[in-house]
Length: 252
Ligand SMILES: O=C(CO)COP(=O)(O)O
Image 1 (cartoon, rainbow, N blue to C red):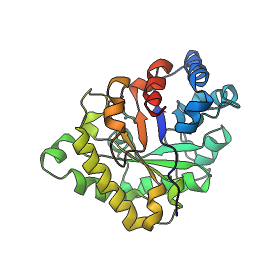
Image 2: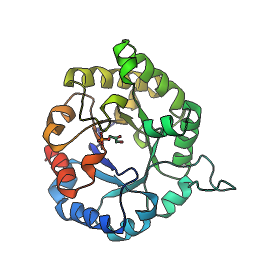
Image 3: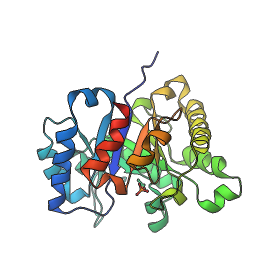
Image 4: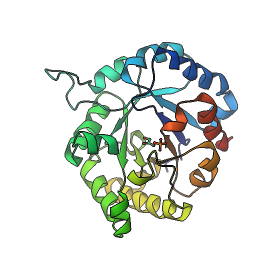
């Protein structure tokens, strides 16, 4: 029997954050007391330039760090890229792969995302594999088919399900202030769980499925209390400690 893991609230800072932002990370640590730690895991994915300093700041705070992308190879002639091993070396334990901004801006394919997820696992990181449909795909009634195809193409075929995290992020909800209804979220997360069961069997209960897209303190309870929602991947609202902690507080 697999035990249900703590929910995970992860902050994706995207291309935001300079040295001064490390104060926000310290403030998150300050509000993350033992009682809250028992109920919810927190992770922050700052720009790679801040990882090492964040990791020193957080020593002992039990807040995880993550990278926002990685190259699929451990090292080599790949100017400008960062390997999963380098992220781990800088203090990360998670890596986001397949974010829709990378799928769109960098033309990342499902196959490449699978290779990156495998790279994360190779380096001892937990990959957070992102999937989600566009507005047009949802309007055409294809949301679950699109997400299932993304899962089939980008999930590693063999992985310990508890090392994997999936983030359902409808593209049209990202940074827009728009969110799906709790019913839509329930439907998509159930479809994702069913797909995970096909891939990993009953162990798939140990894979956390995060919801992402315009999560903020004001809507967190409504979106995150839905069945099969095991936490959140938070963009804009993760940039300030107060708002990020308020989201986590729903689990207290
Ligand atoms: O893309 C996201 C997290 O990865 C969501 O971003 P927002 O929370 O800013 O909508």
